[in-house]
Image 1 (cartoon, rainbow, N blue to C red):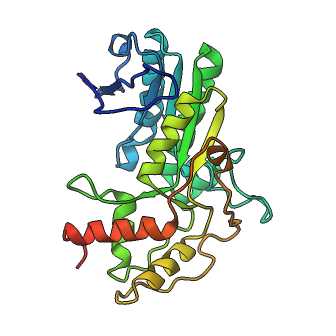
Image 2: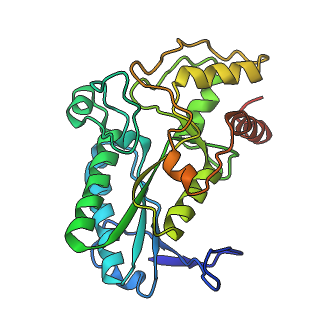
Length: 278
C-alpha cells in the first residue's frame, strides 16, 4: 500500500514546482518502483522498528528497497534521513576533533556495548552511499540530532520521552548517544534545503549546536527552576568537543536554527497542554 499526500502549500525556488509525498508502507518488500514512478525527486523519511532484534535487517533492507524503487521510478535525487548516531558513537577520536560529517560511528565499540540502534543507522546510511555509488543515484543525507518541539502525535517519541522524564527527576544520561538537539521544524527545512539545492552533497549534521547532554539539562533547569530537574555532570559525553557551528553545511544553505531556549519552551508548553507534565 502507498499513499500520495498533496501538501496544502509549498514554496519552491523553482516556479511551478510541487512536492509530491509518497508514503511507502512496505519498504521491506522489493519491487516498489511503480509507487514512485514519475516522481522527479524523493525525500526518504526512514524509520526503523524499535526491538533490537529487528533493527539491522529492516534498516538496511528497507533503505535499499526504497532506493531501488527510486532508481527504477526515475527519481533524480533522494534525501535520506540518517541520524547523529551514525556519527557520534566514536570514543577513540582525539579530544580536539569536532565530530561532524566526516566522522562515523565505531561499529565494534557499539557491538561491545550492545548499542544496536546506532549500528543500524550507520549500516543503513553506508548502504545508501554504496547504492548511490554503484547505481548512479544522486543521494544526500540529513543527520538530525535529538529531535524536540511541540508534540503532534498522540504518543511522544523516544527523544521527547527522555526530555519529559527529566521533569520527573530522571538522571539517565545517554552517554554514547548524544551530540546535540534540534527543533523538528529545522529538520524538515533541512530536508527541503538539501532537496532543492543541487550544490548540496554528502552528509549534513542537523543540530542547533554540538553540545553535551549535561549542557542541555542545565539549560532546562535554568529555565524551569520550579521543577526538580536533576543536576548532571557537565561533561556527560567525555571527549565530545562543543561547537556552535557544528551544522555549518546547513547554515551555509541558509538554515537559521531555532535557539535552544525556544526549543525547550515550545516542548515544555506542549507537554503541559497535553498532560504529560504538570
